[in-house]
Length: 307
Ligand SMILES: NC(=O)c1ccc[n+]([C@@H]2O[C@H](COP(=O)([O-])OP(=O)(O)OC[C@H]3O[C@@H](n4cnc5c(N)ncnc54)[C@H](OP(=O)(O)O)[C@@H]3O)[C@@H](O)[C@H]2O)c1
Image (cartoon, rainbow, N blue to C red; front, top):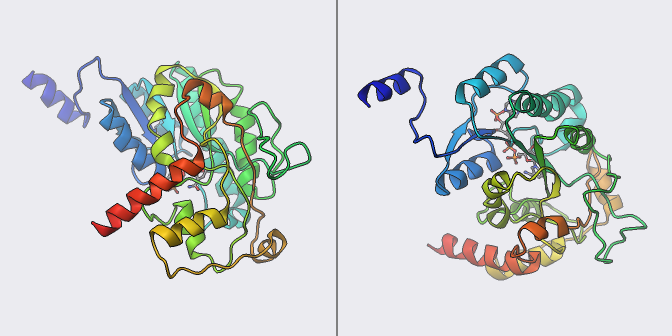
């Protein structure tokens, strides 16, 4: 045993019983979603390792995957732009390098070594249209062709979404407007509470405390292909901000503007849509409706702020 521990130290690898499965998580070291997933995976009793290699370096990604030999790979790495996706408009090659080439590198190496890959993608590749009008309750299904490429970020994510479908080892989770229980700057609630003016459109959104814990189970169930990774139902910006006023800051004031006015202050357009969550609900029927779940988010947020 001492010898094994010594060897593991030498190789900088943690020692786990062979029966414990390993998730290698790209973006697990510094990413908002990746770090949350690292915690969840560990809490569920798995071995979670955050990847060290940069996506643009295929040799180092492959060497790391071969060295760790994980049961599952999760890709939460990608560029979303700082302060927001407008950044991608002026950094197209960097965006392609991470969001298409990098993500495909992971999928491809996983395929080559027969390892399942879970990609954290986005559902911001659709916008309301005649067949899926606002307030209709008709959401876009996974089988439907993306129709929103109004930002370069979304364009790269459409390309990736399509190309990943050719990999039989890949599960692609389409996250939207993620909401966490804290006031992290990436939380959709925090974002819209900081804007000078905000549009008011119902959207599908992802409550991370409901959805991220499903990832290890989705891996174990060998699910593949695209999944709309959102809570059922939609909620509007104003509905969220009214809850923000009720639970967090009664003095808070917000102002609305139209999508046309919003487009004038942004470099790229933003997607607004409803995604059909039926495919996900078949696997996990207990996922709460967005309007129920968000109340619990605000209750937890208020409790922790008052603690
Ligand atoms: N947050 C959202 O609103 C949202 C919504 C829908 C979908 N998503 C998707 O979910 C994924 C994770 O989002 P997030 O909010 O967690 O983003 P994030 O906080 O910006 O994290 C991104 C992670 O990717 C890593 N990364 C970027 N380029 C890399 C490269 N070339 N090689 C290796 N690692 C690289 C970053 O590491 P460094 O810091 O070291 O570069 C960071 O750890 C993204 O693909 C995003 O498109 C996010």
